[in-house]
Amino acid sequence: MNDGGKNATSLGYFTLLGFSKWPHLEVVLFVVILIFYLMTLIGNLFIIILSYLDSHLHTPMYFFLSNLSLLDLCYTTSSIPQLLVNLRGPDKTISYAGCMIQLYFFLALGSTECVLLVVMSYDRYAAVCRPLHYTVLMYPRFCSLLAVVSWISGFTASALHSLFTFWIPLCGHNQVDHFSCEIPALLRLSCVDIHANQLTLMVMTAIFVLIPLILILTSYGAIARAVLRMQSATGLQKVFGTCGAHLMVVALFFIPVMCIYLQPSSENSHDQDKFIALFYTVVIPSFNPVIYTLRNKDIRGAVRRQIGLEWKM
Image 1 (cartoon, one colour):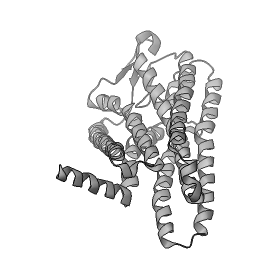
Image 2 (cartoon, one colour):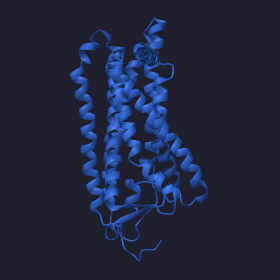
Image 3 (cartoon, rainbow, N blue to C red):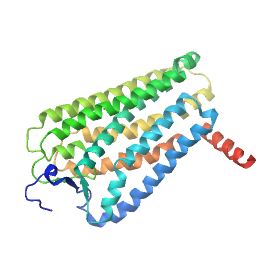
Image 4 (cartoon, rainbow, N blue to C red):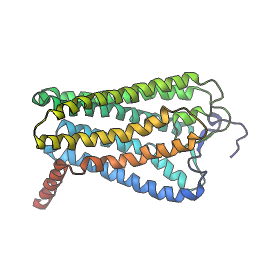
């Protein structure tokens, strides 16, 4: 597609190239992505609704898990419906305003999830290392405050970063070599010096990826020391059951993000980045409900209670 040197600002739209290099894969990708997207919707809605309905799940752990499920729903929905539309036919465009909105929410929700995973690790630290003070430390109002801070920090940082990205002139063609409006792909369209933007991206990555990851690992270092001192097999099993699921989610979320935002950019890495981004945008949000509900006695008990209530009614 040649637009005579016009840029996205003058044309009013971007072309998301996505996976157009592999047209024979587009139908397969459409089906696979649609299945994972439906799994994400069903699984995360299941956790949100069950945590709301069952009073036994009105605890800090499931309050934060409901927030994580809501985040995953919104995070996936910020880009996947557009990708599904683009995979269906030759028209792969998105409006300039739509691209800005998509970038904003994609960044905001991703940043919020980084902070929320830190909050969840602190909750596990308090439950394992400070069990006698747990109810004092994690009282409802404080939990709500932690959740609000997570959301506000992510959305505020995204507003600043998105504006800074769209301030730079995007010269030349309007073709974005990605399936969504991501910062690295947009910066490649610029015809001016982008060192300031790259530095900003590195600082944001440090604040919302590296620092949260260090805090999470610090929390789990303290949990590991507490676990080694435990004598009760039941206590050990419970700790591994709740902390193991969270650790798996942390690994699945942070490793792909670091692969994209912390590795040196090269022409050969662009296609690889797209598939990694597809993994953490589509696959991981669908896995999280499975990870948290698999072998989870609280969830199984809540399901049985809700089914029992339905039968009684």
